[in-house]
Length: 78
Image (cartoon, rainbow, N blue to C red):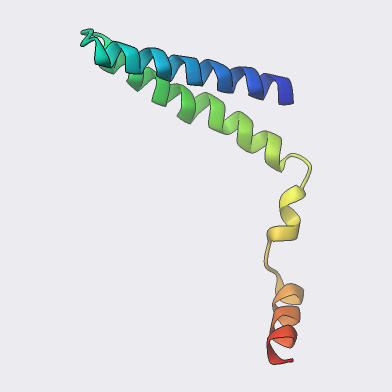
């Protein structure tokens, strides 16, 4: 999964570089290429990244619950 994420990210970076080049050369399809790049980022790269990050439950240590709030209040008072 990590390899797929890296490959997809490299494709996105190359796509955007080509889009910027086309914008600088005033190619008529440059805006379409850049728009498709944003579409690619939004609907392919970000969902894969979010799935990869949250699949193992690594986010649980960042969630606030009652126990963590009480612990924060204790540390604040001391």
